[in-house]
Length: 97
Image 1: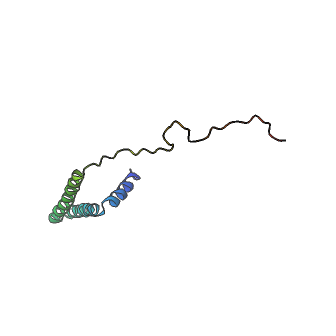
Image 2: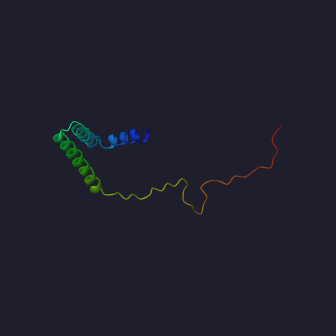
Image 3: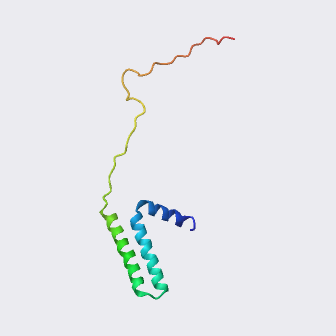
């Protein structure tokens, strides 16, 4: 778990830094408000994190998947009646000594 959490946080911050920062700010405000019995800070933090999370989910739903056709690479030319490469023949001569 210790190795998975930092990797997840790094990837989240790289993809959407503003949304990730707002969620972090909201969670920290909610934690401080909850521990200090400051209800206004708790509500503000939960509201910030909730609105940001709702906005992120809305953006994910608005994205339409792009259907890509698979790319086919041909390394050899198509087969034709005449061969593209000459036929190799093996000579039966003995190599020089």
